[in-house]
Image (cartoon, rainbow, N blue to C red; front, side, top):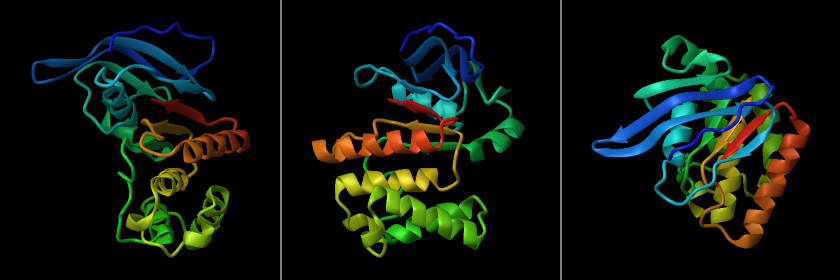
Length: 206
């Protein structure tokens, strides 16, 4: 992927400067620079294999930076201290159905697990879980193992797990790939509703 996006007057939630990434001799990202304005929904569009997932993993802090500078929330993601402060404010939903789920755990247990990871107390955790399951229509399936959900339901559950800690930056890597058209529409309607309730949330979608 090669690209330079025009900066805006907004303070960017993400800023990339001269970012390159290689897998062995294969160059996945080549001198990419861009700004992502805060409070917006931004899409990365391109064919398979151009480096979209690699770029998102760098922004999320999931992959080591090789060349260039990646800033998120105004700080350098190459610094461990900044990653420790920033990663709890980021939600990253990786590509692939149910990649962030535990198939033998129930719907409720999956979301609860992520709530515990972020140190939420029981009352706050249960309040957030109830709200997310209601918003996604998963309340009737709270006791069903994640491995027995349909593709669309897995994506909704993955979103619940990503949103349990009320992040400021939501990163979605091809979130509706492999789901039926109705589930795809419902997913994006859900994202619209979440953004309406959290207008300050920034969203990056591949």
